[in-house]
Length: 122
Length: 122
DNA sequence: CCAATTGGGTTGCATAACGCAAGTGAGTTG
DNA sequence: CAACTCACTTGCGTTATGCAACCCAATTGG
Image (cartoon, rainbow over all chains, first blue to last red; front, side, top):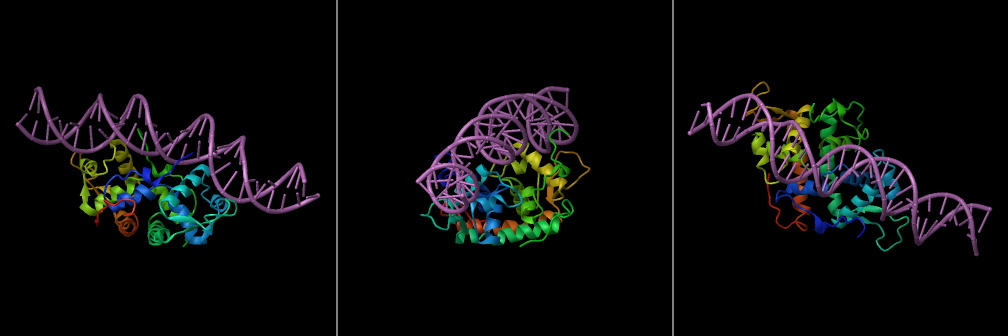
């Protein structure tokens, strides 16, 4: 287990759903992976790396492993070779779409004052 | 500037609103502070500390400063003494309610399998 | 059929963020 | 006016992040 991101090692801070959602998704990268999959449908490791935020490869591999173990994403061909094997959202991951929509809407409405270059997407 | 959390030091990773929202709120504590204010209206420093997730005091002070500098929260009496001075949401902070609602909804529908003790709130 | 390339990672190490415990200092209470 | 809160700050060890380099199997080209 080289760099384990095991769902069984997940430490839940409380019984609150919001807190638990943040235990899983409360970092700067996980929801960006979900965003890319919502936009593109499927995405390979290299394609994730080409997104404008430029995630580091170790972080990317770690998050893909974690999101997979949580059932949020899955490989398009789970038995296939590593090469050319893309990721896609599971229904659980697809269910995050409203969260991203609200977050994007909030940012567009409330962050332009601090970040004027921000654009419209989704 | 003992432990500066300045909005001018904010590093935006890209022009994407979702990415920018995560630049601001993409950690395990900021949205929990917003949650407490949505639930309780106002909250003092000590009250935040009593939430079940038990945030460390330095992190709490840092996030309160950051959220204040971004205009997401404010002090109820900005000119008053530090003591008994509570925080509340600004309209920008209040606008995060749908984000938290969707996150909570998602967690309740999709995380119970990993975290059976999770309860219903909001 | 073999050398070079590409895709999908892992590893090492420096830096930054987090977490805990203890301390500080102004305002309040007894 | 001494003890006690409250709202923080500080120090320091641990964990996470970020960067660059490396690795190996599967193609691809000659």
